Length: 638
Image 1 (tube, helix red, strand yellow):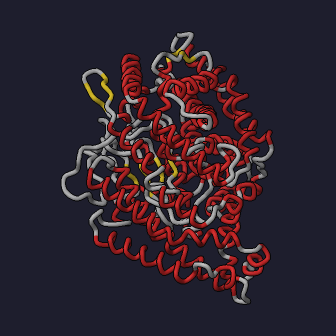
Image 2 (cartoon, helix red, strand yellow):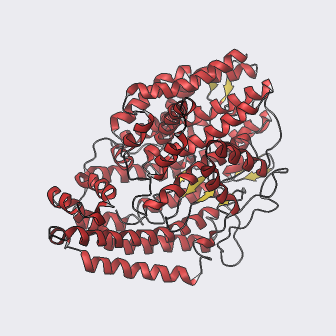
């Protein structure tokens, strides 16, 4: 593949879509700098303390830094020179006796270009995530995206020619030690061979992406970030409005839900158009490439078999009654109700502790949990705090939710959060630092082989959460707080597994039906209510207005069918953690070695040392039984 573009940063790993959307920020004065500003007095609620803001100067000093222009020019020149030196020559040169060395040098140059493009794309994407309404930043983001796309047109031939090489020729070349190093990337790339198109068609698809799906992605981001929701006397951006759905005051939760519904309704035509256009764009691409199922391209990108995902989905849907249906009935009882309104689904439990968790305490919780498992893991995670790799405050204009972006191996990852001192925010910190540790460990594989397919991309993050949760649970002696912690974890796992599979079911329905024509906003709402009713169960009352809550889920727009990776990772980690609890010494070393492998080995091979096989249909039932067991424990507590 050509290097990533700023509009589609292929390595961003985002936090599960629990309710994130993009708040936007007032225009910054003067040129944007690498250090994101605007956090105010700590950037958070009272009692949280001063929150860190990332320093992007490790990439570039600012959007107007001369190094940015220098590297964009260098990228143009490198890509053009690469095409001059290698285009049309792979078949003949690789077949020669020293073809392996020749091809290894070509791949090495290609990787260096990928690393430079990754640095530029990551910087543009991260600055934009910090503030996507500043006109200067928006222009910079768009300009860099276009420059990267234009430059990388010169690289399209490489993967196409590489994949056309005869198997015998590539096998002989791979006996050369220099090329053997790149075997995982070459073999992985050649899996795309059946879906490649003629060179000029590939070039057209690539160049049109800027004015096609990438432009619609950008429109979604700018539209959702510009929305305002009238809650009481305040006009709020979407992130603080969604946060009110977790407020302790019932009136605030209801008011927030009604404000969301009203604004979504007023904008339904725009979001329906964006959704329809992107679904059609994907259908055209899938049809030309020969993908049969609407999710086949995602499965190929994830390097996971479709039947494995089908088994996961079937297992989760079959478990809805013993997981989400049962838990929400239990939660309704805690609130002395038969049913909970949909805006009370994530309401704080009546017996949970009040107050906020200061940032320094959250940091200590996570690092202590990591350190008890592996001092090396804690050492890597601590660098995110000491070297300013985290941006934590809530700001208007900042990207919602959270993510960890590995940038490129010659740099380091950056974590974005919107920390507000809630227990779930602590779990989010543990989650994103798990990604960050994974990305640091995998970076040694280089720009081509560091990225991890989604089948394992959520493993380290969810495992980091589990370590933190288990430590907190074991240290809690108060019965009510232990119950609150356990219930909070169950809710989080339901959001990760049940909710994400419901999202996946919704996407499948939308993309399948879109093949027969456009879907109205009303029809999209009907499909949404269908999957939500099935997954949430009878104890959640879905009231008018909820039919448009599909609009704010960014995964549907940016990464179709991404969402099943969260359920995959959560169920896998449940099984992996069970191995850890019963393992002898050496588990941590094996675990870190698995993360360090990056994208060099198939997920099935990486799981073998732990005795796990995700292709076994019973594998998923084992992971789901962990959640069911926690609900059993909650029921026993009364």
